[in-house]
Image (cartoon, rainbow, N blue to C red; front, side):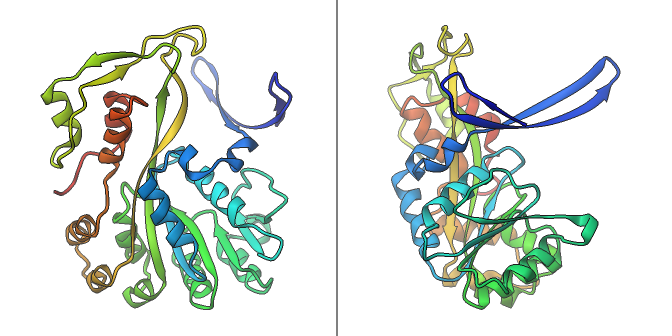
Length: 313
């Protein structure tokens, strides 16, 4: 359904209801079209994240994977990216389930399983539509993965999502689906994992001292300079006494280097992959969160709530 904000702009809502023992339960997701005009820094990218992401999406062909759980902002990131890439001379096509936001500058296709139009069939159809950039809502099976890779190998830039805990796990997930290692080596440009944290209300946040133990718990086993103080939520009329106002992303990303490619094989070790991405400069989600805590944008509790603990040093 659609409604309007008090200021006038239209906002789309997706409602999901479920009967429970004590009545009807309802979840409402809010899709604000204004998020599509934000630049990457407004989404939460650091300067370094911006450079890496721009280097990936500037490539003429290959696959870029965005990973994270449901509700982690993957769709917003992809739509914002496509919005910036979509120009009159660039044919941007998507296949989605469902179409999250209707955007005139894209050619959007809705999955319709009742007529056997699934992700893989949709991509096969798009391949005959002379696309430059293809966005696939989610890679769920081998057939969709094969079509995505075929599109990437035949000169298209492909963006898609996966559900994994961190960025390196996307590689092993693709292998688990059944994609041959040599196809991953030749098609993947890079991977980004993300989470969303609440932003402290600028009207009422207050500085508080932070102990070495609290900071160490956040950044361990990595090193990061401890700030003199951090900000804590208070609550006011502006934020409805929650202490938070809005959300922003935490990101970890890596490009597919030659050393990483050499590690992708049938018996791929996820620990070795993680170690290599760290050597290549990957900044884990916790460190991304720590930098935002140090800037007074969010809290340690928020970052530790959403960012997975380190699985390797």
